Structure formats: structure tokens, C-alpha cells
Length: 345
Image (tube, rainbow, N blue to C red; front, side):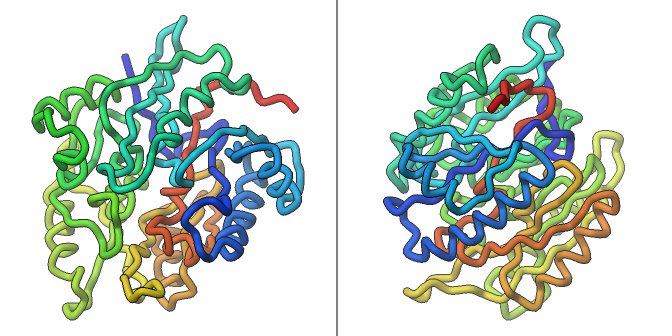
């Protein structure tokens, strides 16, 4: 039996890839300030694995982040820092000889929009690292990104047709074939399909982690808009209606928690950026919530705090990150506690 753990379950580590001068960020210093906050916060609670380009890059990062027993480095090449979409997904097999399996899906730069050769080799490099020695792995010929899927840990997946069925991903596969493969690989019993356009500036073709997230098996937090003048208004109301129609696996309506959109943020060319609060990150004992120096930050934090009374809610500065069209969840990947890593200094 295969199970895709929910993100709020205990974790052994989080993976991030540190931004590099060869990347696309023109505001690298500000982005590194955000990463410093993210790294310092995560290592307060659990292990953090930082991917870095080479020894020189690792040395640079070490000069910025206080060394501690929860900090680990892996040197590997990568094109982009958005490891939510490039680092493996962890499955529980509930088998005595193979308790977990790490799945390496094919990555094609969000529909061949960006160079991705190095990103597509990250997992093979991780699997060869001593940290992951002895773990069962599988490399699959399906184009798929972690940010496109949500799991409640009980066999329900949530995703968007706009991404998974986009012909720029798996053009030769039907909806039925893609759904069947996901249910097979991820051990799902059912899929909640959302019809939803991407947020302005989002180049992932509407990843679910910018739109709607499971907070527990019965609760969904989602990007919402009450301003009829906002270009997102109609599409997000349409998504809201779809979420209201979804039922839990016991037939109940989901509890829905509306997260406001921050005020529009634009890049230097006047292009709107996909800032949102749905891109939060679970860690052990805390929920890190992206904030954008915006009046809506406070409301989003309050609403998520009500969802997670047992967790510390940590406002995490992400305004610099959205200049490359992603945020906190996009930039991180959790590894469940059932994946026993070889973490030794």
C-alpha cells in the first residue's frame, strides 16, 4: 500500500536551493536576506538541507548562516531554486523491506519555458549523496511538479486541470491516463480536479500551491478576492464555488478558509507578480507564512493562525522572491519523518 503523507505530518528535513549569482534574480542581496531568515527559522525546529552549486558557493552561504547541528549542505548543479517542483516526492510504502520510496519525476521547465537540464538531474545527484544512502528510489517518465499537487495524507489529491492536463507537459496522455498514473504512483483513492487560471505573473500554468491548500483532511485554505475591480475576481470566485462543491471522503463539505490576495506587486517592467498567502510551508511545530509588507499580511496570518492553534505562525518575508514568480512553498520541499536520512556531521 502506497501513501503520500500530508505536509503537516512530522518531518525529517526541509530542502532548499540557495540562490546563486548565475540565476535570474536581479535583487540577489534581498533574496539572500529572505533565505537567511528561512534557513535560520527552519533550523530552529529541524534539519535543513541546503543545495549549493559548489564549494565556493557553500563557503559563501556558510558565511551568512550561523552553523548549527541542523544545517547540512549538498553540492549539485541546478538551474532554478524552485525545489518544490524539482526535488523528489516521498511515498510511504508500508512494506517491511521498502518502508519508503523517493519518486523522481521528469521536469521540463514548466512546459519548456526555461532551461532545465541541471534541474532534471538534481534528484539523481541527491540519491547518490550519503544522506540518502540505502533509500529506495524510482525515476519515472512522467512530467510532473510537486507544486501542482496537494495531498491530505488519506488518499485524496487536489490539483488543477490547467497544469496537469496542459499539452506542454504530457501531450500524449489523456486526463484518464494522467489521473491513473498519479493514483498509482501516489497511492491516491481520488482526485479533486480544480478548473482555474493561474494568478497574474504565475508561469506554472496554475499550480495548486498558489491557489488552494489542505490545512487538514477537512479544511482547505484558498486564495480569495472580494474586490470586483480586481482582474482575479471572477476566476477566484469560480474556484471558490468549486471548492464549496467538493466533499471530504466521508461526504462532508470542506471547511473553507479564505486568504486575501495582497495588493498587486509589479516588477520593474510593470508585470504583475503572483504574490499570495496560500504558499505557506509546514515545518515541525510551526507554519511559515509568506508576507509581502502588505496591509493584508495581518489578516492572512490571523486566518492561518486560527487553522493551526498548536503551531507557531511565522511571518516570512517573501516579497523579494516573487520577483522570480514564486514564493516560500515553491522554494522548499519537506521530507517526511518516515524517510530515515543519514544526517551526520
